[in-house]
Amino acid sequence: MFLLVKNVLTLPEIEQIRHIAKSVRFVEGRASNPHNLAKDNLQMDVTQPDAMRASNIAGAAIARNEEIRNFVFPKRIASPLLARYEPGMKYGTHADAPFIPLPNAPLRSDVSGTLWIADPSTYDGGELTIHLGSEKVSIKGEPGSMVVYPSTTLHEVVPVNRGQRLVLITFIESVISDQIERELLWQLNEIHALEGLKMEWENRTRLQYVISSLHRRWAS
Image 1 (cartoon, rainbow, N blue to C red):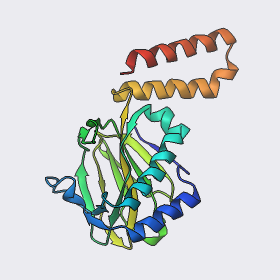
Image 2 (image 1 turned 120 degrees about the horizontal axis):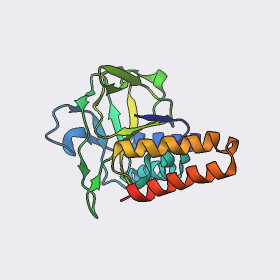
Image 3 (image 1 turned 45 degrees about the horizontal axis):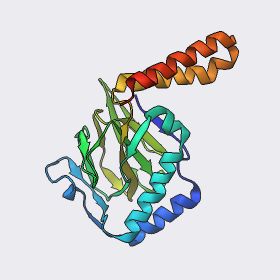
Image 4 (image 1 turned 90 degrees about the horizontal axis):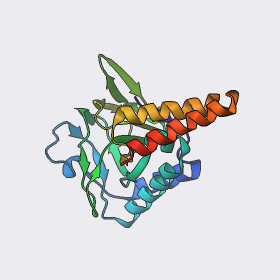
């Protein structure tokens, strides 16, 4: 299951990141994963000071977003990384690595996220395509929107035919590592939020008890 969230970034934040993207150096995307032959893109050189500024802007926006928090139950969020796709570039079908190396300790990638920066009208192709069984769902988000999905999901970025695809990518370790448990808890919270006020107080309290108990039981 995946979730598309609008307006994760504000317009000023989008403009700041676009400005940074024009000035920072980009390197071959496979520098961070040289054995991944499916990867053909460019990524921000993280050694530059402005690179950290872009990551901090995006990271703070993700952390404050209530929809993402309620869906992902984040424990740790990897610093978002700017990625750029020029015409002909793509990222073949893959599932993301189970662990992301970080300075303190590896991050278990339970949930992956793509945060769009470029206006979709400025480039052709470049859709993020998520494989759901025999079906494929293609997403080309508006600037500032973000999609989050289990990191085990097969997905790809189809070739860019015109213009420049600019996104930030990140990986999130959830306090609830199991994908099914995460989804069940999200569904229960949605039901509580949408239907709770229609319930008798006793039943609403019992539902909240179940949600809280499962959250404690499944959290790690």
